[in-house]
Length: 144
Ligand SMILES: [Zn+2]
Image (cartoon, rainbow, N blue to C red; front, side):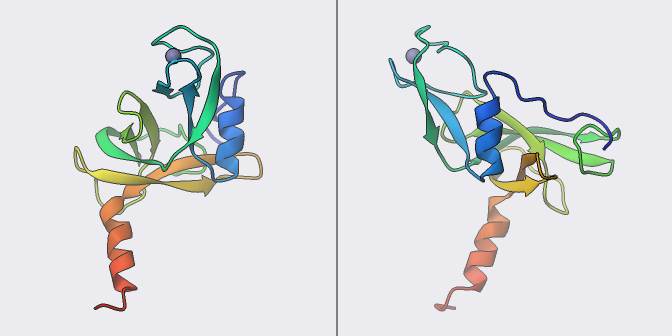
């Protein structure tokens, strides 16, 4: 497998395990309730260590993106597009992932995460336009 492969550490291993079960969660501080991502040992707002997972929907808006011409994320040919997404649930948090659409993203565009299983041990979160999902829903609507 070419290129970079995420290496879970003490703080992020449980997050990757959840992702493999198609669960998306951020940390919530036990003391002040601040949500945070990526996983860290203590709260940047109040410096307390107690926290728990808060499951949330992987939704956000496109902050920026790059077109990569070298293999960096496993399971993809280059060039490919990586987006930086600002989470709706945690406005201070940015999440990076592969872009899943035939066109380029637009700044501020609403997107939704999709779980992509790379192999038996690794699942990654990719991002697709929310509008594409909405169109699919409309197509199934009996009201039309
Ligand atoms: Zn806190």
